[in-house]
Image 1 (cartoon, rainbow over the protein chains, first blue to last red):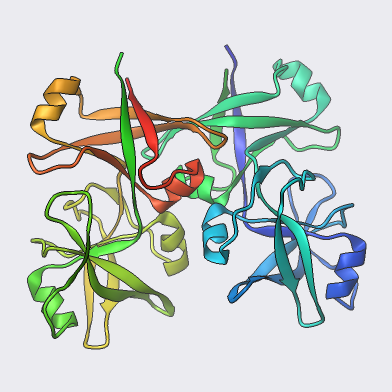
Image 2: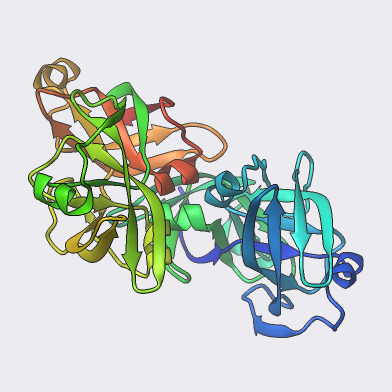
Length: 187
Length: 187
């Protein structure tokens, strides 16, 4: 029976870009606004607009550095607004991803890149051994007035990780969770 | 150990009005658009705009008939957008409710009326006895990729009820639940 505390990182809607796609959308170099908890990653000063037909969401933050794939992560609330039905996927798995238009003042590109991110936990191999989190998927307990349990929380092991659980804004708002709130991995 | 299936009703943002407040906002009589599952209640053709400072949400549906209190039910996603921090309350309990401006073409009123609705189950006294749901609060299990458990689901007993569980759009979107989806009351 695992009972292990972990802090929450709320992933608001955001985009990752390949270097090639970045320069289709921006002229100047990518600029860091803030570091984020995952080592080496940052919120960029640059934002894009997401479009589908006549629906638009402005000011969608770019997360750097460049990645080998362009990926748009939105909430289901956003998806209803944009009239899209993206699948729940782990980062980098764009199988079945929805086509979406990404625009800036400079340009406009259309990519099969839109997903809902799965609930996941970032962890190093050392921490995983130490905490004995040998399974791929856990449940996570949330206390409080809007508490409950998240099923299907995936372990994302990487040597370059900050130990935290990532959820999207729908999961955060449903459970009344904010950045750095504490929840509990259970088995 | 209770294990009882129940269907979901998703409550989108909406408003209830007293007769007095209705006629401050509309000239003509209230008109039914669709009945809703709870007996005697209906979506009205009339909508209002919710405002707080420079933030606005249009096309917020009125639910009839008139009530003894004016009440605005939004999601936490809406609350962040409107820059409000409403408490989680059961319908009719406006203790600590946030002040919000309600406007139409005809008029504009400001009321301490804005809440986040609690997760609740509508049930008749007969059904409650039959299903042996003698506690005030239950947990509800949701299956699927975005499944889990809702804590703090309140029993709302009323002779004039349709048996279903009401959640707001954040809870629905977090768990990927739609109108009439089936979930399970557990103990």
